[in-house]
Structures are given as structure tokens and as C-alpha cells.
Image (cartoon, rainbow, N blue to C red; front, side):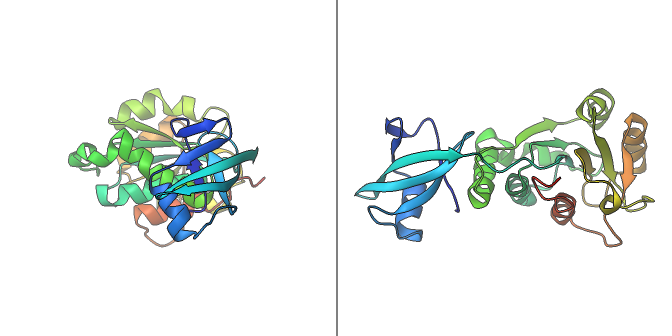
Length: 240
């Protein structure tokens, strides 16, 4: 945890003094080894980042005096459209998009997505938030990605993809594509990433009909989480 995230629902004693009683207090005391008078990096969920000075410790609870002055890191240039991954990979995927500062993650259905994946409790709002918060705490961010669920592939592509991509590039990852994502200009874009095994030809054709252009990520076959990281690493958040 490189940033202690503060929430509106925390125990605020005034506009800039807050008491923490949960895992954040434990992290400050046990992992950071902070004492009264020490400063820790903090941020307001959805707002600015700054410093919290430890004012008091009482039975494992900590009271911080908070000054928030800096803006959070910039958003990534890419929005991601991702075929819903298997549940054991989902938390890692959510944490990754939060670490990179992705603004929007669209989880979609695909021919190679098992129907049972949509039933996982990891898609509950609470579990999604937990995973995103873990990524934000690691990357010192305060702004959570927005996660959208689309359980039908064709309606998503035919009815929503064009609007999502309005005014920016739209790419779909395909190993047989004639051009590499890495060779494209750095600009704002929507990037579609398939499931293990990739999108089926019908899905690629439908996305192309909408406006997506095929790109490959290299000569190797990647797992979904590696493909996602490869895509996001093409441009660092805040790069021109």
C-alpha cells in the first residue's frame, strides 16, 4: 500500500482530521511502523492526494491530520474492452487496470467465455471495488476505473462500440493482424482484447464492420493478463 485511501464515510472529526480503525490503521502502524508525528501519503477517494500526519494512536486506531493539495495521476490513454476472464484471473485484471489508471473497463461476453464466469461473486460491486482499491493503493491513485458489464457481444458491438470510439482510434487484438499495436501513433483509443484463444472470426468481422481495426501484439501468444499489460504498456499514463 503506497497510498492510504480516505473515504467520505470514514470517521472525520473535522474537515481535515480523520480516525481510521480498519486495515489502513494496521498498515500504518505495523507495516509502515509510523509513530505520532510521522507523515504518511494519503488521498481522498475521487479527489486529491497529500500527506496525513499521525496525531494520535489509541488501541490500534490512528488519527491523522490531513492536507490534500496535489492532483491524482493522469488517466491512461486507452479504454479497454476485455472478454470476461476466468474468475481466478479477474481480481488481477481489475487491479492492473487500476494501477495503470484506465478510465473505463468494459467486460464483455465472447464465444470463448464460459457462461459460468458471469456467475462469479467476484463481479459483485463490493468485490470489484476491493480489487480496484488494491490497485489504486499500490499506484498512489485516487480515481477508480469505471467497470461496465456487457453480457451480449453482438448488441455491444453493434449498438455501443461506435459511440465509445467516437473521435478516437478503435483497435481489436488479433494475432493474424497485418500491423502491430506498437507501430500505431500514440493517441487516445479503445482497445479490444479477447479471451484465452482470442476472438472467433465472426466476432472480429463484426467489430471490423463497426469500425475496429485489427492489430497484433507480437509473435508470441499471451495469456489474457499478459496481453492486457502489454497493451497498457504501449503508452504510459500521461504520455503525449
